[in-house]
Amino acid sequence: MRLGFPRALMYYEYYPFWAGFFYKLGIELVTSPATNREIMEMGLKKATDETCLPVKILVGHLMALRDVDGIFLPRLVSMEENTYLCPKVLGLPESVLYAIPESEVYTVDINWREGKRKVLHSLLAFGSRIGRTKSQIREGFAEAQRWQKAYQRMRNAGWSFEESMVCFETLAEPIKLKDLGFSRASSECRKPQKIEDGWLLDEGIHNDSGKVPRIAIVGHSYLTYESYANMNLLERLREKAQVMVVENVDANPIEEQQGHLHKKIFWSHAKKIYGAGSFYVEDPEIDGLIYLSCFGCGTDSMTNDLLARKARQNQKPYLVLTLDEHTGEAGLVTRIEAFLDMLERWGDYEGNLSSYGERLDYHSSLT
Ligand code: SF4
Image 1 (spheres, rainbow, N blue to C red):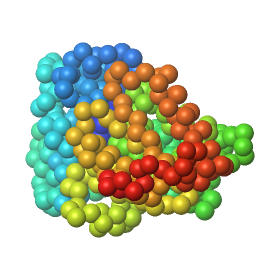
Image 2: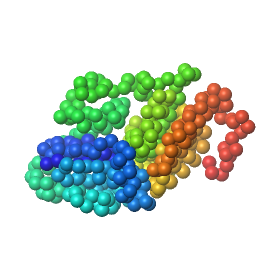
Image 3: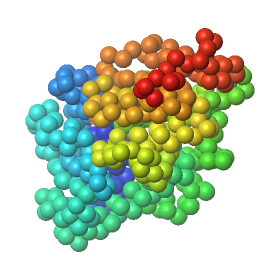
Image 4: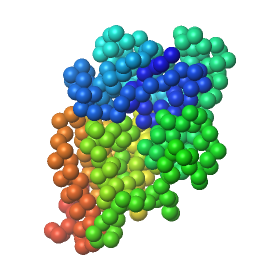
């Protein structure tokens, strides 16, 4: 059996879980190709106008899955205690079924908020649909959790998203990664980047002044790593700066940052983005933040505003890049370059004062 899995939305965080699960069940999980013009156009044509860009891209990926026996699209309700995924994710797969009327769609509800037993219960029900026994599903579930943990360890150890995904997509038995200890790499995996004082050192970085700025990108994983939609933002920045992302921040500091709010954020992605963003705002080693926002995203409108206020309070340079299908490459590049130039001048000449005197917004009631 070959099941198609779209390389979009939750692929960027939970692909290892499903790869491990289906590997154990002897089912081949086929991912759609990386986003390209054709996929993007199919998604834009078919998806409803008012939805967000990541869901439009997902529709394109679903349509690009061919030569498979069915499409697997889980309904992710909650991935940790006291949080939910956003309503647009919760509405899957029903909200996109119209785009693939000919395909058989397999789905399963995943709600960690109700505990591990409930998740297993859903998987067992799903197992009967794909002709697997209870014990096979139990083994698959255990394997899935091991693969997901291995992925998280790789990310915490400094592996980039691309490096870790190559392992899970190409190794026959990625779980052997646990034997790697992250100090030696498999011949099929690229070595993790060197870590020095907790920083990833990207050898591609060059900077005329000799000082490499350190920038944090905060945003949804499915935008940060979606290089077609974000027009190679990560690669462009890595040529000139050391780049940190949301996934480089552990769960503990994220949780700690929530404690400063009157009310905890219950949307999982918004929680992670706010927690990691606040952590970077307070980190003196970070020179500036880029918020990669998505036009039409409800949770972004809230987290962006919270982070902008916090950045202003801490006098941390902060840039918002909002992406949608109309975003032009030239405009994006100009804004990044202007931001990097501003960081350089800020560090070299201006401190926290602009050439015109004290920052006008510093004592504003908004801060
Ligand atoms: S969190 Fe925002 S970007 Fe993500 S699916 Fe929901 S609306 Fe779209």
